[in-house]
Image 1 (spheres, rainbow, N blue to C red):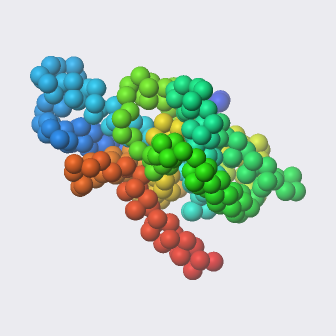
Image 2 (cartoon, one colour):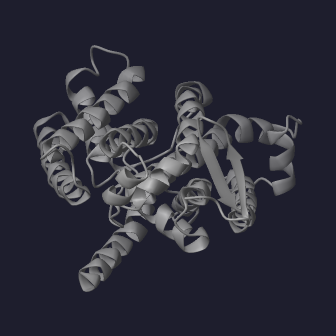
Length: 350
C-alpha cells in the first residue's frame, strides 16, 4: 500500500495521506467550477446581480441594495449547498469503500431515513413543547440510532458482511419510510407540510446563525479526521482478507468509519433535509475522474457533491421562476435513473 512516486504524500506516526498529481489537478479544476457557480448562483434570482457586484459584496465592499441581498439572503443558501453537498459526497465515498458496493450511500444504510424519521417525530410530538432549534439534534439522533440498529442487526458470526449490511439497511429504510408516512397521514395538516418540506430536501430560507454556524463545527472537525483515515478506508476497500493480512482491525475500523460517515451525513441531513442521491452519485463520478485511492477520492468527492447540489439548487430557482423548487427534487430526478442503471449493471456483472 505504498504510495507511487507520482503521489504527493503527508505522513507521520499517526496517519498517512497520499494524493496523486492528477487528483490535485482535478481538485483545482473542480474548485474553480464550484467558485464560479457560487458566484453565478448568488447573482441569480428575482433581482439579477452582476458577478462583479457579487464578488465585491462577498469580500465586504458596499454595492448598494445588492449588498444585503448577497450577504444575508442568497450567500447563506449557497454556502449551505456547498457544505451539505461536500458532506454527502464524502460520506458516500466512505460507505462505498467500506461496503464495497456501488449502490451504497447514506440513503441505503438507514442514515437518511433515520434522520428523516427523527425530524418528523420531533415535528409531531415536540414542536409545540421545544424550540424548533432542537430539530437538527432530533435528526442527528435519528440518524445515529437507525444506523447503529442496522449495524447490530447485520452482526453475525463475530462481524458484519458488506452485503448483509446493505440488505438490512435497505429493508430498514423502507420500514422507517412507512412509519414516517403513517405519522404524516395521522397528524395535523400544518405539521405534515413542515415534515414534507424536510423530507423533500430544501435549503430555502437558511441563515448564518440558525444553519451555517451550527453545521460548521461538524464539518470542520469531521472532515480533517476522515482525511486522516483515508489510508484505512483504502485498505478496507480491498476486502476483509487483505485488510486483515496487513494488520487492520477490520471490524473496529469499519464501525468507526461508518460512525464518521453517519455523523457527517446526519448533520448534513439535519440542516438541509433529506437530499437524496448526492452520496450515491458524487463518489461514482469522482472514481471515474481520479481512481479508487481515497487520498484522491475524498477531496474530489467533496467538490463533486458541492457542485451537484449547487447545480440542483440553481435549477430549482431558475427553471421554474417564480416558483422555488426544492433541490432534493432535482437530485432525486437525476439520481433515481443513475441508481437504476447501477443496479442493472451490477445485475449483469453478477
